[in-house]
Length: 457
Image (cartoon, rainbow, N blue to C red; front, side, top):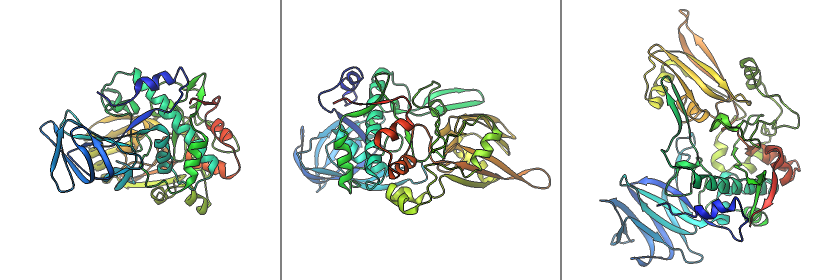
């Protein structure tokens, strides 16, 4: 059974609450062994009070919990450690940026309760239970630099709160299936991933949901002020909390919801120009080529390195040239990447052809043609995975080929735009807007058209 407050979240869509709910975050999942430290006297059923370093191992359907001298003190499928006020816990070697180009591990520190839950496959889910507003302080600081402009931090807090509450209300009503949502057919693989994929906890701690790296990155009182001053505020559309998506840099045009997820229209997640001037939506391959190869004026086309350092967390500053980018492969190298990522053997690659694009130029259906087979892959995230050892920055790209004198492809060149799926708020663009004097309301209503800001609790 999931340890969460689904009913409370579902009711929030209809009635305003009097107080914030607790939520559960999956910090690590499907682990055989876990290591960490308890900074304070945590209490658990069958454990009494425990502190100091600990380890936990999955064995024969149970979690075996060891104290700092490696003495077994509890054996159970579920272990919950309640945190006394002011206490924290550490987890070691927490993966972040999983399967993205910035993937690594960190030791992280968290507030709130620690839950270890056994999965049916014999692994452990590591879960943090914490009040929603405390969760947001970490999420905002993990997503962006806490020194970013205050109006941006407030706007991000409101949209992050909105995304979480809307998603959990929706999750309550959806039957669980598998970790991958979508459809497959002969010759076509169309896949996307969303919040409903999580079963034992409300949200995960990585980029699949929102980054949540504990209290380690809360280095400024600005984030605490941004969360406190916007407490309980969300954006709504027609009296429903908005499913407020965001990505790092849209590349000048934001994308429509259906390009990345389910085939439905979400009015406030339409494509808009991330600039003081309007840009028309991309409709043809010729328009996509002109747009992606251009250096358009846009809020997220930032040249000020000092402002970028103030906006982005340290790890994200390693990603360069995100507004317009270029990746090049030999044919043999790309064949090996696609074979590994797709588990399909295309033989000799012949061509890669966009079949369908969204309004920002992001491809949601891409045809890969080889000597042994042809397949159409989608949506945007799956395309980015198939064509990179990690991920392409986005699926807004055009493809050029270099051929030998015999007409055989020798190299594939991808010129692209933006960083992320591009739907909803552009984080870098919004931060630049805030630095130029735009208010919270102006920023949110620029990216999410037709919305209102309401206080839910």
